[in-house]
Figure 1 (cartoon, rainbow, N blue to C red):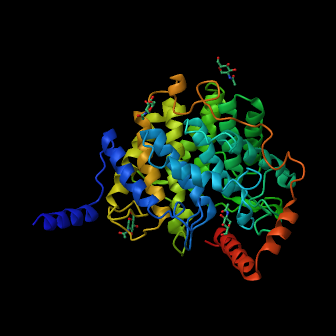
Figure 2 (figure 1 turned 90 degrees about the horizontal axis):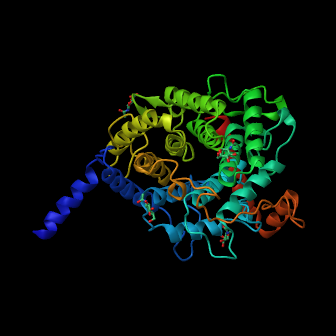
Length: 451
Ligand SMILES: *[C@@H]1O[C@H](CO)[C@@H](O)[C@H](O)[C@H]1NC(C)=O
Ligand SMILES: *[C@@H]1O[C@H](CO)[C@@H](O)[C@H](O)[C@H]1NC(C)=O
Ligand SMILES: *[C@@H]1O[C@H](CO)[C@@H](O)[C@H](O)[C@H]1NC(C)=O
Ligand SMILES: CC(=O)N[C@H]1CO[C@H](CO)[C@@H](O)[C@@H]1O
């Protein structure tokens, strides 16, 4: 009898949607806990014989684990729940690479600037939220983000008047594509380093990247963020599709610049511009939606289904750092979380426009759901101005992460050139492995060009 009851209970628990009450912190914490657990159940990096910091299986890419760790660091920031601390630290440190700059040799053929940036976002989140510092002698969160930043500055070229390429290495396809996610993420990292350290060097880079993206036409006068262009046509033929993560990183970076400048008019205007544009483009009936997914003839891939999660993440950050935006943002995040919750059965779905599960069960889809649900927790955090209680501390308000302004491969001598890395990596591997990696890279490029 008892076990029958249990059976019925678990049956209903798997079939019922998650009914989220966005006005209740308890309800959101509970839903975040459930969906976070579903997401994390895909991760094998803690188990013997598996690599820390990697997802496995088709559709999984290196950057997505960096994105997940960023989300788990936010989960701790919002709840103080420490259950993922050890896994996050282990995975984050395993993937730093030989130069402590998130360019591990295994990922030589896939690590674009955008991919690396998602690991830097996680490292920045750790520094800003006082996530436990790694033991002395290990790479530190702030220094890791500075390493990524420094390396990116060395990838800036004059083609198209500026900007960094999508790829880090010239032998990878996509090296001639200068895109908004790579440059926008670079901008976001620069803005956050400016606010955390107070060093105007980072702020000057943030301004420079922003100005270039505007001049080249990737950011339009209406604050739409277009995907990017090929430098061989001098960045004139812009792929004008819009993806929510491009708006997300621009919005988030602008919010940090607003905070860094103590609320300047120009950054207020930009924050407002990106929110209004994103609310127009990526929202349907009050629910965040990756509309570009419905324009294509093939379903969005496992990268693209995560994008709207980062829009929610950076909207949550913005509502905190730029308080006048809070009512508009929290209202949107609330209605979206309610809609997302309705798609959850055993797993949560991707299409939040309908209150039904659409059958997409990947870890990436769970990540998007986790981000949008937990971003609602920001509204319960103590307000900005609480010093060491701030959601985003700085070096002068309680941050403890140790930095290294000279971190990264770029400033060290004896660091192999990209070509040497390629040759070494090639020598280490059998041809078949390389071929499959190149195929992955080619497929990625195809996905970008032909959705
Ligand atoms: C987390 O713990 C810190 C330190 O005890 C406390 O100041 C903060 O208010 C807590 N945050 C949440 C969201 O419970
Ligand atoms: C690189 O790949 C090897 C072989 O699979 C693995 O043992 C190692 O942990 C990987 N390193 C990273 C940083 O992923
Ligand atoms: C912001 O205000 C603080 C405190 O008054 C000041 O120290 C800092 O220089 C200001 N920052 C900027 C970029 O103006
Ligand atoms: C499966 C399903 O019902 N999909 C619908 C979800 O909602 C959108 C618009 O709101 C429809 O276009 C889909 O057909």
